[in-house]
Image (cartoon, rainbow, N blue to C red; front, side):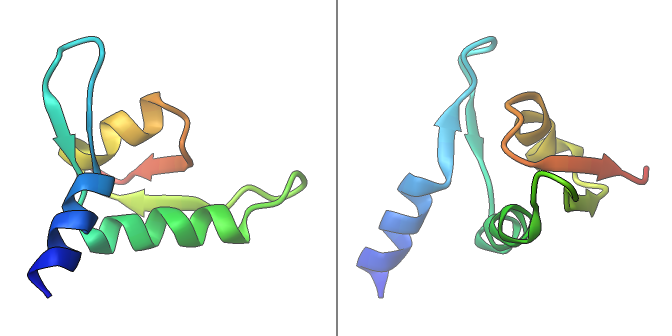
Length: 71
C-alpha cells in the first residue's frame, strides 16, 4: 500500500516553471480532473467547480481542464 501511495504522490506533483515551487494535487482532485476530461468533448467542455485556488490555479493556468472558482 505504501508503494502505491508513493507512486500516486509522484504522479500528482509537478514543479511550477514560473516559481520553481512544487505543486501537489490530492488524489480526489485528480479524480475530478480525470472525470472532467473524460466527460469533455469538442462541443461540450466539462469543468471542475471548486474553491481550492491553491491546487487548481496551476491546473487552470496549464489548461489541463476547465476550472471555475466559486470563491
